[in-house]
Image (cartoon, rainbow, N blue to C red; front, side, top):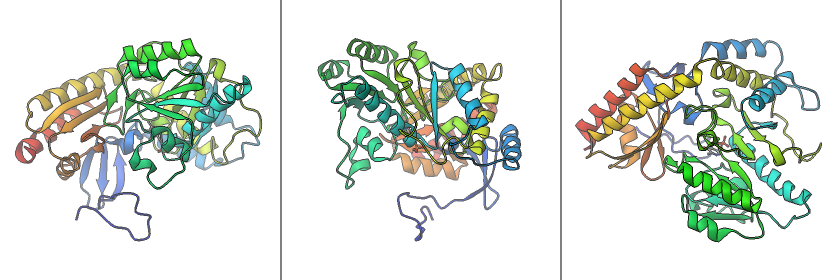
Length: 394
Ligand SMILES: *Cc1c(COP(=O)(O)O)cnc(C)c1O
């Protein structure tokens, strides 16, 4: 009884026949009352764990006050969210939407408008990278280009040049007069936890600066504190132009944002872009509650410390299982184990032993615990991985 066919739902997911009814911190409880340690967090979404008391309180309070007004009016919660994002990043301006793909879409339009406004509308080509994932809209699948995402959905949006990830020479060769921007996912999540070398990112930024390309860092999965800093680009020590974020931003309530600064601000006028739901009071109140917690003194330091602990313990656990785990990738609380057996089989074994992980490309299983995970919970996960793989997966 592994996968459930639900005839009334479009079969775009291979659903596991398991339903959760409750969440408590790092734990999920199913219909049978069984507890699972959640090292998926949705997919890097519930960064503060399930039902964090400050988030629950905020959602309940806001639900009794106001859910929705149109963006035809000022929305205090949206303004507060934008102020917090601006105060804590390179950003000077924010567009709030509902998902990662929408944030990507907004960023791509922003690049187009940038060159249009400069009188160079033919400059539309965006350099992207193999193995990246940017979402499911037509623009986002065109940007990523993989057959799995695009097959049967053509014609795709033109204007993307997809290069091998991490290959500086390929970048140099790609420089052309119509290139407009680069869109890079600095730690590829869906692609199997592939980290861009910080020197490669800096080289990429230098090429951008030399050729006036806009630099976009897709931090929908890796951003919002998962690596112990607000954004991954901060580890490389430079300032991008545009950053789409989403997944962890409101702890499970759908919110995305396109944050931009410098030359990438001020490119839209009323009517150029928008969203009915984007930035509504309910979702933004919860995003603000997430930021209350994450911006509190000591939070990022703790994420760094617990991330270093998780990475060390997962590497030690994997080193003791060379016949089952080929490689550990990632950093902090964004880790991947490349398994010897098919990753989905290993995910099933771990799930049956009470640990939830998320498969990714390249036979990798992602470990994306909540940022609030405890050292005991990390030990529990390592014990499950060790026992399960020693007993059955070798
Ligand atoms: C999930 C993801 C997206 C798309 O986000 P959705 O909310 O699913 O539209 C875009 N980019 C990256 C890096 C992602 O991981």
